Structure formats: structure tokens, C-alpha cells
Length: 72
Image (cartoon, rainbow, N blue to C red):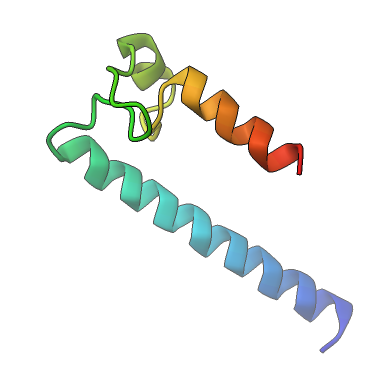
């Protein structure tokens, strides 16, 4: 597989993963209880839900997740 083929495959994988996240977010928006953080259970503020409708966590929990991920 040449470089262009690998790049195309990676791009397709990325696009497919993105589409799955979008679909998951759509389903979550239609599900009951999506106004609550999946980690702490507190309400996700409406401003955050409007800015990032796919958000499953409040800003504090999301920040903690990102710190854990990037600080390994």
C-alpha cells in the first residue's frame, strides 16, 4: 500500500468514526436524561448543550477527562 492509499484509508476511518459519534450524539439528544453528565450526574448547563449538543459530560468532568488523557 502506497502513501496515498494509506492516507485515504486513514481519512476514511476518521470520517467513519466521526459519523458514528454524530449519530451517537443524535440518539443521545433524543434519549431521556441526556441533560445530565454521564460522569457526575449533575445537569449539563443549557449553554453547553447548545454549544456542543453532542456533549455527554459537564465542562468540569470533560476537562478532567482531557487532563487525564493528555497528561499520561
